[in-house]
Length: 227
Image (cartoon, rainbow, N blue to C red):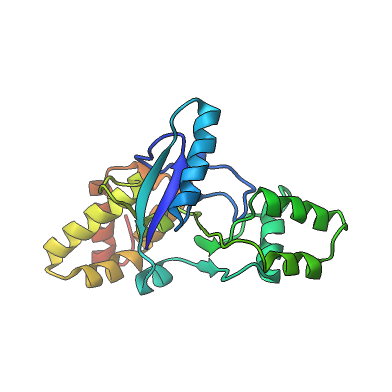
C-alpha cells in the first residue's frame, strides 16, 4: 500500500524518539493512504515552521509477514472500540499500549471537539458514534515501535530508520552466507533472540554497526544464545 506523511520537510530518517505522545493511536510515526490529507497537514506544519511543507511517499508492506512480525490493531470504522482506544491514548495518565502498528480512522479537529463533549457528558456515546456515520472517510497508520518500521519503506529507497537499514543488511548477508532465500532468512532473523534484543529500544543495540549485530546472530545460531 502506498502511504504518505505530511510535515514541514521531507523525511529522510524516522526517529521515534522525536514523536509526540498522547495522539490518537499513541506515540509513533503516522502516515495515511490519502495523499490529499497528507498535503493538508504538510501545509499546516509548513505554516508553523515557515516552510513550504512537504509530503514523503512510503510503501507499507501490509502482508502476512507484517502480521507475523508485528502486533497489529485494525479499526475498520468509527466504532465503540475505536473511541475507547482514542480516549485511552489521549489520556496522559494511561499506560502506552503494546501494539506495534495501529490502523484506523482519524480523530480530526471536528471529531476531537465532539470527543471532548462526550468526555464532559454533553453527548452520549451512542449519539456520538451515530454522528460519525456521516463523517467523511479518514485513515491513518501509526508505527509505534522500531520493528514496525521494517514494514515501511520510502519510495526513493532511502532507509526510513537506522533500524530498517540494519535489518536489510543482515538479511542480505544471511542469504549469502547460508545460501538461503529471503523468506528463510527472515524466519531465522526475526525469530532470533538477537532480533528481540535489537527491537528492544532500551538496549540501544540499534545504534551499533550492523556487522556487530550480525556477529551476535551468527554466535546465537552456533550456540543457541547471542553473545
